[in-house]
Image: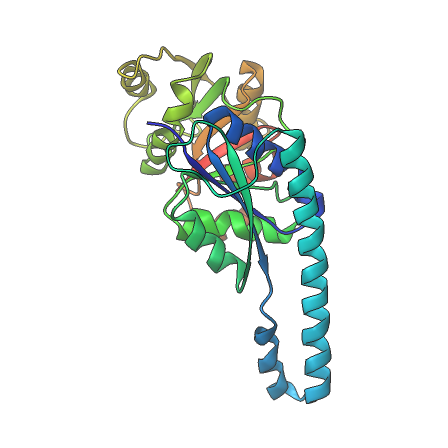
Length: 289
């Protein structure tokens, strides 16, 4: 089992740079195809404002301004993509069947970003999203949640700083839930190639389900030996303890189930492990829901 297709939705120069470098790194690592996706606002979505008392001329001006802004952003992102692919020595073009080298392409679509990202992610082995706090990119956060909730596929949160490696040392956040198991399944191709793997568990994080020892045994069937590490919450934040344990292990990739203990709305309002990791992770994080 290997990874052959990555998707990377981008929306701003500030947040896309590190995520692009992560995507190109993964494309080279797996000799896979990376599709960089920019979703431009559909100017027809502005038309309904005509019923809000705006004149036809003003609506047309708004549509023209939106189109100009979208085109300018597309040009900037395409230039960044082309430059990055050249520096990473990743050929630009369509993916070739059975290719033994990496490739990358840039796609522009018009419409609702959350919807189109979710649709495209359904046919990607892994979708990489820029860190939402890189430039405080709201669109990146929406893309991440679109993949988590509407694609049925895993998502990789890219770090704010371009990573030197991804998947050499892997931390598996385990709490026994179906979401954690789904993330484990998605990270297994990386686990098989890792230098070291650690399963992280905590009484503060655990839920009814298979134990860390069960996970260790499962991974051993794939020819990989993993050790088990325990962690505790820091200042009552389970996510802080989890990230500290991953950092102590020297992990450059962590897998975890997302929003497995509470609803997304509850976590956004009250906080939770997933939210803390999304806001504070310094490494790549693979998530499933």
